[in-house]
Amino acid sequence: MIDKIPKGKQVILFDGVCNLCNSSVLFVIKRDKKNRFLFAPLQSEIGKSIIKAYNIDTKAVDSILLYSKANGIKIKSSAALHIAKHLGFPQNLLAIFFIIPTPIRNWVYNYIAKNRYKWYGKKDACMIPTPELKAKFLD
Image (cartoon, rainbow, N blue to C red; front, side, top):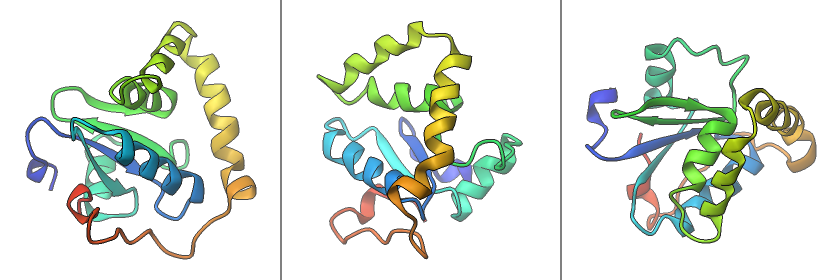
């Protein structure tokens, strides 16, 4: 399944039932001017195959992952910052937060991730992309 990902693309895996995650995906799509990213819910077949290939504990990492053939897997705050640095100005300025040690960045990330359903809500099912956005999503 992973071998079906087009060369040069990065895949953002997200929690398909999380309102914050879905809003973040739409934010990235709008700003992905170089068409670098594809998207798939963690709950999808491609999501499950990447999780299995990298032996990721979904109890510890259940929100965002960034996968590319060239760079492997990035998780939590590192995934978010690697995504942001490719979105152009001013979002790329968020890469400055790489100077903060990963455990501190991930503490903040985990706090938000832990409360995301309470603060932003949750859907009953994964988002269904509009016909215009369908090409950006992997099944």
